[in-house]
Length: 143
Image (cartoon, rainbow, N blue to C red; front, side, top):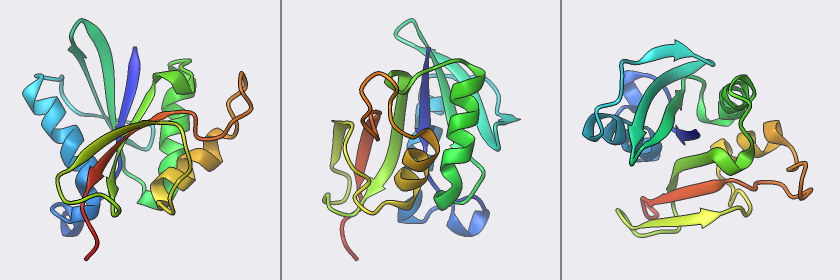
């Protein structure tokens, strides 16, 4: 089982904002792969589905970006998952629009959502490192 998190800000005024690229990615994954109905859980919206035989929990925190870590840690604890099961989809200013890169671990690069997740998770118990989760960086470019 894996927890995939799409970062964004809640509310219709942010729906198509470029900083909501993580929410848009989560919605697309759920639609393309026929995920189940949305459930309100863990201070967010959760959908359950399968990709390639693997169970995927898809979470969009309903908190604002800078508080995303609360929602993510609640879900990880409930399902007894470690950071190796966590993938976060987020907007990336330093990548050209629509370019996508996958990264394992690393810093927050000033991203408030990643900073919140890192803060709430703390260091990985097995390695002592912070931020030891996968990120899918979705390029939005600089304005």
